[in-house]
Amino acid sequence: MQVKINGKPEEVQGTTVSAILKAKNIDPHMVAVELNDQMVDRAHLDHAMVKDGDRLEFLFYMGGGR
Amino acid sequence: MQFTDEQITRYSRHILLPEVGGKGQKKIAQAKILIVGAGGLGSPAAYYLAAAGVGTLGLIDGDVVDLSNLQRQVIHHTADVGRPKVVSAKEKIAAINPDVAVVTHEERLTAANALKIIGQYDLVIDGVDNFPAKFLINDACFFAEKPLVHGGILRFDGRVTTIIPKKSACYRCVFKTPPPPGLVASCQEAGVIGVLAGIIGTIQATEALKLVLGIGQPLTNRLLDFDARKTALREIKVRRNPNCPLCGESPTITELFEHEAEICAVRT
Image (cartoon, rainbow over all chains, first blue to last red; front, side):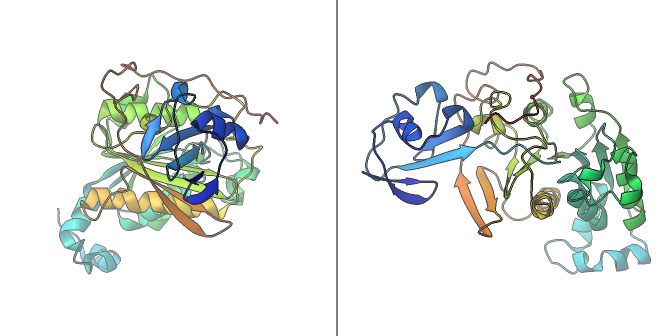
């Protein structure tokens, strides 16, 4: 199925946010996840179902400043 | 307050703007802005806010200038290496604009001093380089009910967002807690393209001035991400999170605390 990840359409395998993160090799601790503009709690990534056409944002921490 | 002829000339390009005018310039002259971290983001923010005529600029930083800072921390000069950053920055601000009263806090922001210091200002600019401090600033601004302009830079990427406590999404609404120590690069090992500090810090200063003037649309409920490799900006909509541990419906954070300090090494 196709979903939009960080604004870009992508073909993904898997039906949960965790599965997509795993397929993309992203450690869930490194990102905050938004599914269709709603934050998904890190504890619920396994249960967050993703369907065709959904929009995902993987927001990486950005910590610098000095 | 009355502006002198000299001040009217100095601020004439602001006063000419219908959105600013003499009235707006007075608001700027009465504003008290705290910049946390006199480094990469703090340098351009301090420069432009000083030039703009912000009445009181607070600087908090406990560090001294290091040679490796000069690639991006443009308020410090080569001769300042080894000197306290707040002292170095105060001198440059005074040289740009003697109208600005600079208050220096030569210390680190902590859970013990944050509310007392932040309470003296109208708004806060985050220019720190580590997650425990970013979360502490977010929490302190929430408890003190002060608007916060958050910024972050890493490698070729930068991010800005404005937080109006209890009205717009806070940092914890998006990032509940800091990443586990060592997992996400935030320290000197990661590197950063120096100009990013200028771009992001200047956007932060823009946001601060807009808040002071009460004009335009603040960068609230939006993360503005800048990718220097592509020279592209992307806006990510965020919203207040009912499960936010700080500003949500059943908060678990009810007082200031400090997250564990990061280990300054990137796990590979």
